[in-house]
Length: 338
Ligand SMILES: *Cc1c(COP(=O)(O)O)cnc(C)c1O
Ligand code: SF4
Image (cartoon, rainbow, N blue to C red; front, side, top):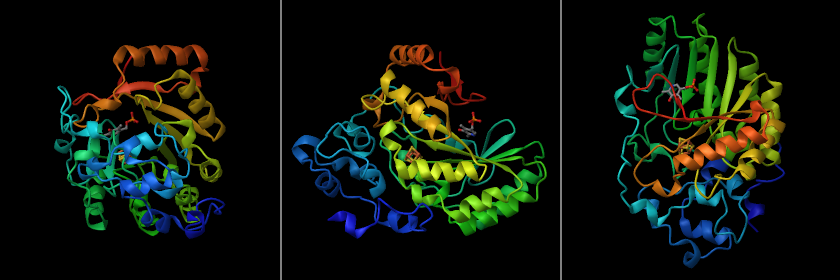
């Protein structure tokens, strides 16, 4: 029995086991199929893992329905044969992001906020991700780089918010994060620290006591922007982790990507918003897919996206409707799509 090997369910929320859970993530397509009682006849052999590695932590696998080849969580991580197909309009670097960093690991595109990359790899590889082609998989931006960030922030005193992004910033250990937070604390002009992360979603045990204590005792307002696409991603462990963040004063938000056959349905989107709200998480953005090579099979047409948005407006209170946005290279913000 696999449950005997790794205590995924029933784990105390503050169990510091997240690194172990991370290292036991599944990377072999055949193993994932076996755990889910699925076959290569149903799903294909997962060969596209050679384009972008399969990587999925067990606590996320546990939320997939066994025997369901269309499970909405499975479809987000399964290497699909369509990934080999080139489609017009889909490119390798749709956001031209590689060209807008003043110092390594720091992007300053938008006004008073800078975005930093502390850890470039991810805890889960989402097939639709525009980062799938980035050469930075094994790069990390450690303390040596941070000094350059501090210098940049010091010489740009209008900056009032630092965003930790990635990749996956919470792959950084709590003690390293504490050093980063301490370094940022020297700037009175920094008011907010924002973390864009999917790790607490796929491994809720990542919300450790030392992390929430760090937030509760720091001079900034902390925001955490999670990335949840489907209501099935929200299980009891995630609800407990979110409650711990809430108690520590961390404001929780969510961004989703609109994905064909996964969440392109108003019933699912409405249920997602309701479940997020119950977990103290504020719906924030619903992104249109970035048009990157190998992800075209996830695309939802623009008229359909517009229709879903109108249906959400009709069914939900305004505060449960995320902003429908897309990212256009060179624009001064995410671009609302209505
Ligand atoms: C999305 C993004 C931000 C944050 O934008 P908000 O609209 O404030 O959420 C900041 N910097 C970069 C480079 C981004 O892509
Ligand atoms: S950056 Fe976010 S969407 Fe992309 S693979 Fe990592 S966790 Fe998934």
